[in-house]
Image 1 (cartoon, protein in one colour):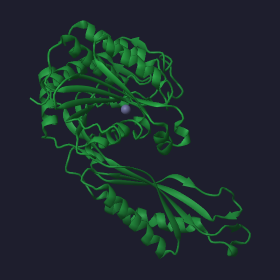
Image 2: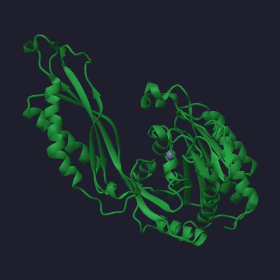
Image 3: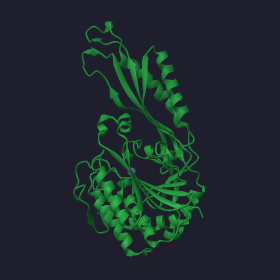
Length: 409
Ligand SMILES: [Zn+2]
């Protein structure tokens, strides 16, 4: 395919991607260094940048110890253009831990083989950020006036829920763009117009601990838990899983609401005792037609009902909640992007709901239209020997440049 933009734009994206992979941005590590690197590149092209540091007490309230709350978090905003309307591109610069078994290269030593660039984050999602960086640098270099603002938000911590990244940007800094495009690796043939919601619960069942030789002195919490779980599996799960969404999802099976029990189990851990307290987890996923608060209430109601039936004391702990996110497939943002992809790449992307959670909900929760469209194969996210096809990276820049010019027209 022919290049629509000057060659230096694609070279810049490739260079930015390579350099950015060298920063091992796992759980607060090297965040400041990478953000400063992006800001330096952007300023070379005359793009205005601001770095916001997320306050320490904000981090401490929202991150548990395993997430390094002592390491500072930064949001970088890059802006060009002027006017009332804002098109924001959003990308997270944190990556998941590399894991073992890399053979092509070390995870933080990017390596190009044929037309693929290997390294942790190449696809998820320093690729998307490199494309945004090159696109906004190019737009700034043309000096063509824009009658709206184009902004890139470089955010941390998407991989641990996003509260201290996009959550802070939207809820505390008050970011309210008109349109948001997140550059997560949907692949260029797919546009994510939303994602499913989720509730993670832990159900603690309480009895009375006693010695295994004298069970008559105790009350077995495990046996009660089995009854509760059996009821949830046999009676509640079919009700929940009969709910089917009327929209298209990235996988056909994903159109259903789901409920998974027992991903996490706890017990006292000795053979010769009557267990006095045990717990099991519930991972409940919501289709976009469901309401988060109602789903939580419903689930708690079922658990409490069955617990009282078996005379069991339970405590329900909500571990995390994520509202479903959705933008109508015929909305102006979705149709404009779809038209531009058609003009630039010659095909129309599928418009589907993503099965996994993304940062989109932070925007749609406050009424901002947000979708995700970015380079890279989603199957490459979080894997060993992660790579991105560089052609995918280049073509995404073409799309972002056109969208930036034609937004709100
Ligand atoms: Zn990601």
